[in-house]
Every structure is written in C-alpha cells, then in structure tokens.
Length: 252
Image 1 (cartoon, one colour):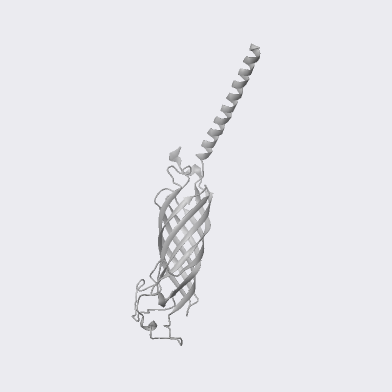
Image 2 (cartoon, one colour; image 1 turned 90 degrees about the vertical axis):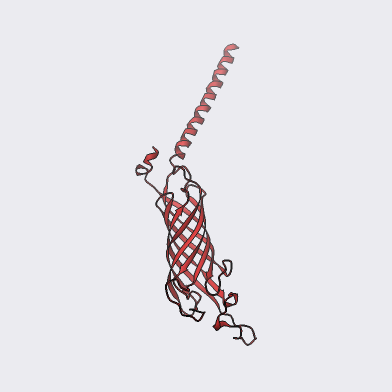
C-alpha cells in the first residue's frame, strides 16, 4: 500500500513538473517572440471624412461640409517621423448668402423674379494630391518593436500639394500648402488607426469660381486666396519589415 502511494506521489510530482516546464517554455517563447516584433517601413490604406471650403463666402469651420475619400501611403524613417503621400477626392460648396461680408456684385437689390436676393452658389469637385512630413510627439509602435514606443501618439504635419477644382466657370489647377494635427493609434502590429485635421492653403482665389469678389484687385501668392479644411479617419496596413541585422544594435 505504501509503495502504491509513493508511486502515485512520484507520478503527481512528475506531472506537475511537466506542466511547469511546458508553461515556462511557452512563457520564454512568448517573451522572445514579443521582443522581436518587426519595425515596419511602409504603410498603405485609405481614409474617409469631410472637406469644407474656406474663403470669401465662408469663414466657418462647420459650414458647408462635404464628404471626401482618400488613399494613403506612408514611408517611415523612424518611430518619430515619416512622409505621407495621399490622393483625395471631395466636394467644395458654398453660397454668398452665408457670408457676413457685403459684396457689391451680390448686393440685396439684385433681385430674382420672385423678389428674393440673388445669392451666388457653387458646388465644385475637388481632387487633391499632397506630400507631407509627419512628426510624432512620442515614438510610435507596439513598444516591442522599438524601445519606449507608444501605441497612441499625437502628431503634426506640413508639406506641399496640388489641387484640381472642376465644375465652375473654369477649371482651376493650383498648388497648396497643407498643415495640420492628428492622433494615431496602433490597433495591432500591422494595423494603424488615425484621425487628422488639416487646412490646405491654396495659391488661388478661384476655388469658389469667383476672383476678387470685393471688387479690389489683389496680387501675391497668399493674398486673398481660398483654402479648404479636411477632417478624416484613416486606416492603414504596415508592411516591409526593417532589416534587424542593421538596426537596433544598441538593444542587444
């Protein structure tokens, strides 16, 4: 009887040792795998949001917002910085009826047959392509791909772009300077969710189809020009892992 009990105790200890060994092996493997998460160099994806005209006939950020969509590509230099290339499509709309400024050409005594003021209205199509430099306030990542990286980080951006606006008295092709802020969050090692808002300062005063509605001629790249703002949510997929034989050598 004692021999049987002793054998059972040995068997129980053996099973316990086996479970402990398997657990430690799994833990060590998980830690080793977590410490070797790759750092990716590129992202590709898309975004949806709203775009709004800002100019002679509107100075409110919440007025005349229209839907927009974009495709996004990022080239990352480090967890702090990268270049973003994007192409966007949307609408620009507005009306002189919403403006607080008095425009001689659209004064209230210019009446329609129904004896109502005749406002100027426009609804144009916008195509935009831009390249901006993004700077993250904190290193961005899972925390396992780069020491001290954060899943959530705010960022700022600025760069150059071009815009093509059609649907008005004439089509307009012009440059612009986009600047803005945003927040990005790493959902998973390869998935990135972002929210960003920016203003595109254009070099043209004819995005709304009207040049110098004040009746005063202006000159210069940024004098009395139109612009537009965009608020969008983006989702991107990371790819092309950085070569570890030539990176993070200080972490070994």
